[in-house]
Amino acid sequence: MTKLHPRPQFVRENWESLDGKWRFAFDDEEVGLVDGWSVTLPAPVAIEVPFTYETKASGIHDESHHAVVWYEKEVELKTGKNVLLHFEGSDYITTVWVNGKVVGEHQGGYTAFVFDITAYIADGENRITVRVQDSVDTAQPRGKQRWLKDNFGCWYVQTTGIWKSVWLEYVSPIHIDYVKMTPDFDAQKIELEVEANAWHADVSARATIKFDGEVIEEVSALLKDGVARLSASVLVKGDPWSMKVWNTQTPNLYDITFTLVQENTVVDRVASYFGMRKIAIEGDKILLNNEELYQRLILDQGYWEESDLTPPSVSALELDIEKIIEMGYNGVRKHQKVEDNRFLYLCDKKGLLVWSEVGSTYSFSDKAVANFTTEWLEIVKQNYNHPSIITWVPFNESWGIADIHENVKQQQFTEGIYYLTKAMDPMRPVVTNDGWDHTISDIITLHDYEETGEIFAKRYADREKLLSNAFQHNQFRYPFADGYRDNGQPVIISEFGGIAFQSESGWGYGNQVQDEATFLERFESITGAIQDLDYVCGFCYTQVSDVQQEVNGLLTIDRQAKVDLAAIRDINERRKK
Image 1 (cartoon, rainbow, N blue to C red):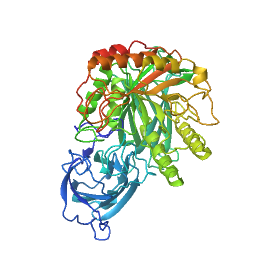
Image 2: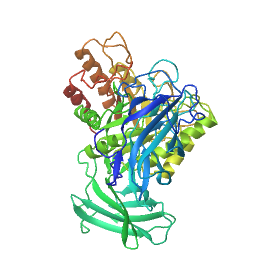
Image 3: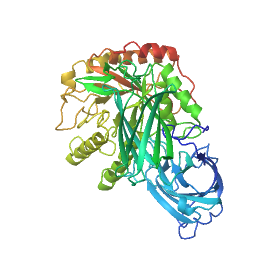
Image 4: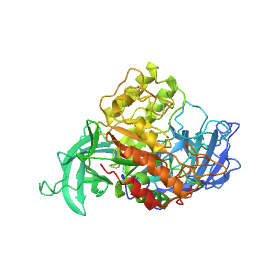
């Protein structure tokens, strides 16, 4: 990755990337803990972090499953300030030692985590050791990672160990842990919560808001129970027309600086940003900033040929976003993955809408419920501040809840996640369960890979009949689980298409096409059929790029266009509302 901060929405000046060469070892016999690998790693090889051993980019490229892996690196550190060691993503159970002493453990493959290693370091060279335990357990949130020996269907090579950036930052003993920024679009204010590790009565938090370098507002409040709550106007001298709106055409971002002050001394400073936007539902319409929004989404699994789930560079992320916008899409459904923070930052900057998911489990048990719930709530908290994220999608196609159509426990699980998500974030829609068998859901999202526009149009012509479970909308599943019904929510066709060209290997949905003309004819037929449905307020085409054996992308896995992207854009933009 380039020198762009790993978390562009939470930046301190004094940080250091630890990406690059680490020592690495497999622990197939699981002897490392007993044999003291936390002190010295025996017979290591080199690995390029943050790429996992399964990838070519790592320098190892072994696609077989290894349950336990170890990493080791010497790092020059300075004492005098607190040192925080950050992991943006490590799959699945990660234990960290510094100079042979354990400093912490984290479970979850899609969430970031941090350890304060101050008490374990010395001036000069320090050794960081990491052990990661992964598994083929289907009660673990996996997403598109296979749990069988070989790839199958739409499941791909597993991701084991560190797969996102590792980095350090130096902070004051009293510092900010987290900020929550909630735009109140109608009131033209931003509501702020600042969480710190300080419980002192004399510590205050201050927020300074700027736009294009001009100070708009500055507010402060004392911390109480470790939290300061602030509210600030975004208007210039009270001018009601001066609010800068975030949307897909003008993705305006306000700069905001948070400081902690103790005895008139600034002890911590964090730079961030926010966007003033509102996502709401009125009847069967979705509104962005009180205006009707027609969503032209594309499914984005975020895989690359050399590095699998890990983006090879910031420029690779930027290229994807530019290609998506070039094709006439205004958003992505980031599928079964929590993408790099720098991707969300670029979406914030460029005005690309995001539906945020997580990797699914594939079995239902108390263990799976606990694993999923903990990780999902962390994801919502960690990604809450991004204006580009407009929808949460915790469940997809009944994965991990296979019997939800009739199973009350599984239905109640989805309801529980819905309400927990709403408790943390009442402003964004929540979709359960994307594709079919919805329980409580703010949007009804339907998957259908029908090849013919004429059949598509007939199947979806009668909304009332469709959403009364009178028939299986995709000849496979019903829109609603038993006991649930249509309440007039918005409807989006959230997976369709998946057209593949004739090839010797790989697959797409339906019959493969032989040339570009045939592709565009079918693409226009099915897209147009959806656009002509007045009650449907958006769609999501499958997909941006090929992924391993799944060759139904508009781009190849190395991001070469398969068809004329201008023609795709012309078709996509025929209906905007």
